[in-house]
Image 1 (cartoon, rainbow, N blue to C red):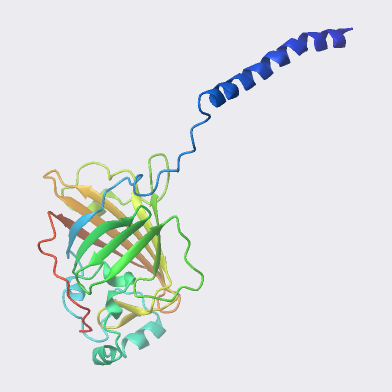
Image 2: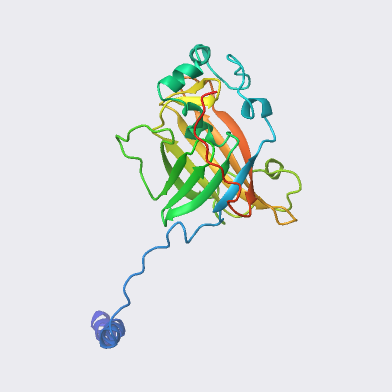
Length: 272
């Protein structure tokens, strides 16, 4: 008896529920249907920082390794293993030039350490482009991408980028002390993480300190503003090479934003 009563009482309820579900669908159909699905925001639209523009490198450390070509065999502070040291000891810049390899010290694993200007632009909504006047190099940072399995090794390799460290998320953060003197307050929410593979063997320093084709390059691009309005870009670079390094080689390079490209001066690669 109780079961029959429940069934009788439930019938009107289920009828009303069905009507509630069908009515909005009928109304949508009557007034043009559901709006078409919108594409997800692209990396350019969701960028937590704007790195576009012209930047000049500020050499505040390792001056003798970056501003002049070190002597052959001078690989201090680079964690080379015995094989890497032997390769560095055979450096011959004239041979590199003759073989068309004068850009070995301008590959992605070393490029941010070269005294240079950067011109950063969006090539499209999913590709950030970095051009350098030193060595006339071009790096393409691909968002929402996977490295091709059989990509031909290049000086700049194949770079996969993503916005990381966003509000509410974890991840790597640059400490305030790394950001330079006069920086006020916390770093901006979100930074750029880039992983580069498929590299052509090159030099970490111009005097032949090597990295191999097995190298993986991890970079973090972050920015901040000084109280006077100056904009700075900090690129932290982590080079991992099981062939020539005993441990990751970590550096941090600083760039200051320029108002325009009036000082842009492209020059070709030099082996010496």
